[in-house]
Length: 167
Image (tube, rainbow, N blue to C red; front, side, top):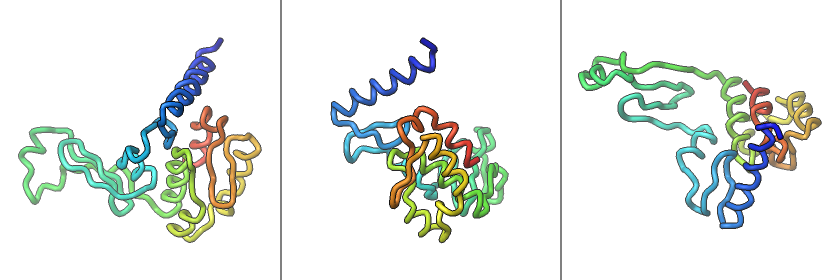
C-alpha cells in the first residue's frame, strides 16, 4: 500500500475515534471538545486582525502582514524611533484578500459561509469564482449548498489541490 494511502486511512481512523470520544472536527487539522476550539486559529481562518508582541511575533493589521525582528539584541535595544524591527511580508489588495478568505475558510470543516463573504466583500463568491468552483465541484473536492462552500471528504484528503486554486 502506498504511503499516502496509509496516511489517509490513519487520518480517517483517528477522526472516527476522536469523534467517538466527543471531539469535534472543526478545522482540517484540529479537533477539540465543544467550547475548546483554538480561538487564535479560528480568528486566522476567519481573516481577523491580530497583533503579535515580542521577538519574531507576527501580526495582521489593515490588510498587512508583518513580523518583528528575530534579532534579540536589536529587539532589546528598541527605541520609539526605531521602526526597522518590523518586516512587512504582504500588503493585500481586495482581490488577494478575497482569494485568501476562500483559502483560509476552506480550512474549516464548515467551510466558507457565502453570506459572510458577501457581507465582508459585497461580491458573491459563487459568481466571482464560478469557474474554479465548477471545476472543484466536478472533481468532487467541494460541495456547495444554500450558504456554504466546503470540502468533501475527498476534498479533505486533497485539500492542497483546492487551496492552490485560490493562490
